[in-house]
Length: 526
Image 1 (cartoon, rainbow, N blue to C red):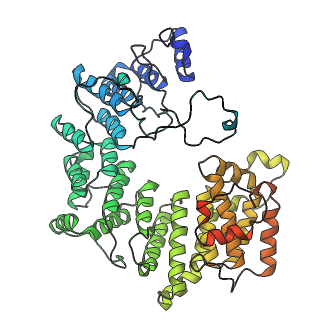
Image 2 (image 1 turned 45 degrees about the horizontal axis):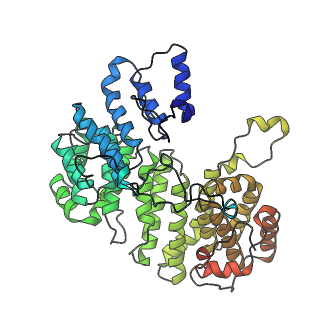
């Protein structure tokens, strides 16, 4: 039924633009071939899956052909539906006789790593009117997601393969047999996804010569004038930190005084001591101070995590996170949404440890005297509140910088952090900003999956905090916000009609017991 359909039937806007260029007399080269593959059509006029991507800064001159040929094959692998189709493209490249390249292996590793999407049960050609108003948030098309599509139900639609699709380790062994050294993006991806610690160390050892040997010196624990953190690409430095933190563990209360070990002792500790892996990642950040923010986020994430750890470590982890944030401030590196959310979570765990009485007197005084002001300062810097103090006049509107709107998860964590610290003035200040930018906040929440539900949880958490309910002890109403502040906060929330007003008591009870997530109402439901 599709044999009569030609290019015009499924041409994307990007593909149409390329054809307008050709019609105007522009002679396309390899770069345009790569763009055309992602736009929906291969060089042999066979269709591909339209896929969004960011093409590298490589020109279409003949001198860059050796860089563009691997990118063309990588594009063919990425613009497939199933892993079988991707593997068929990979095997076609091997049969072409062209040399193996890291970019081609990276495209295939991506297909193997990301899980297969679940098969949709939606009827493709349904005329059921009852389903027209249901929000289908799980149905996505190939090219809109990183996950591979399951193989067709009928084997008649299978693409022929001369050998079965390998696993992660099988493809890694094939790469080693082809004498392809992992570097740059491929090395970063493999470090972030490798299933075993020894495998990651082997990858670093294979790539010890790249970046003029700096990766090898960092692996061996050698840090001198020949090694610089900023001389290694930020994404690769982040991948090394992520690898160390992912396989490391934190058993001791603090490692403020750790320092680089001699190379021989470093190699032995790196392979046998998982606590040292996290310590070494911490030392790398403190020593090199990269300007790539995600590298810092990896360290903060492992410190903020509470899985499998005692609550007594919460205070030590919190102080380490504060120290890391101060290091970022010294190099003029602002926090982003993710780091702000992690700091809020770490603050909440530290405050819970104080409430349980498991903190020392000095730690208790430190948390109660500095935690709230730190969160407020970080939030104001994140949203640009200092530049949003006064409402602009009509003639100044064009020069006003729009505030940054954090996601609903960040706002929810901020409310929880201020709530457990009993900072009711901070909650009132947040509510003033919250309602002033309600349109932007709502649009930001509706732009992501489960955003409406998280926004509603933020409102419920706000009422729980104002009522004096504890997040650990259920509905403890022994203390709460002063009556005037509570009334002001409630009035501000009720002024936003599309949020449905002040959340009902039943939702507060559900939230305090952890049951709200099992019965999520829409935003505004009371």
